[in-house]
Image 1 (cartoon, rainbow, N blue to C red):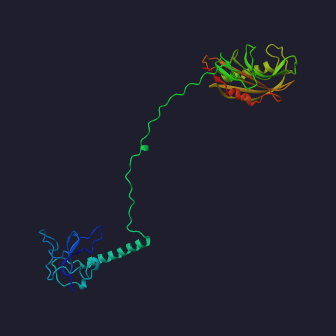
Image 2: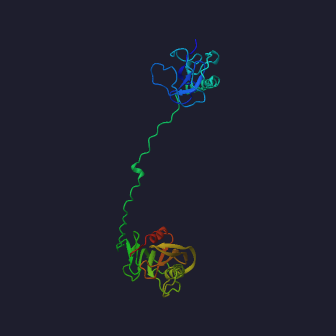
Image 3: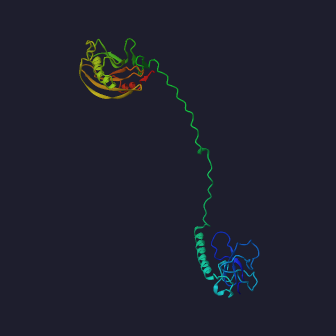
Length: 331
């Protein structure tokens, strides 16, 4: 049985979607194609006459009636076998060999795809749908919160734990167990009075801190004033004193420098010098002189003198650093 001429699914179609239909002239496929027709009875018969000249001419009318299914040798729509096709010449260029080769390649590709699908267990690969980006509230920068300046810290006031040096605009913390000197014109506080070893009729102090305005110095820098004052400091405390009438520690044997460095006091850049003093009688001492500009803006230099005994019931050396760190400006 020969396959009658008619419209059949294009055996060479490899794209997506339904295959277009190609005209079979009874012996070979022609160049005439048309879009796939809606489902229904097979619409065979002759192609519409096209007034546009074609390279292959119009298909010849077949002698048999359409409606006999796909051409022989082309099950599934892969084209007829040329040796089994009708011997009629449809008037157009015969493309059997080429289409047969394409159809064969398509069979191999289809088989490979089916094999991969069976191994992987999935159908045709597809991209996961991604939602369109949406605007989030977090994408829009939030307005900066209104900044409010912190309330200024209240100025220190005089109490049992604070010694005010109003002339130099500073407040010095007084450690627990220490006492402010209310009977002297000097601004100082102390701890542990006891009878001096060199002169028992006199009292010595286990610790003392004195604040005063620098005076009588040729130096103008904090470093220069501190280095010049340390000599005066140890002489006034452990030597003969300003008037040569003191010998409470039996005199100074020697001293050594423990520290000489920059320091910040009450927000001002200053300088610190610390010596250890070896006395002839009684405990040895730690003397420290600190100089820094007055926070009040007067242009004057402030001098702090520290004197601690060494050993025994003397306050710890760490208290010297704590007092210095706790000094605040009053302006």
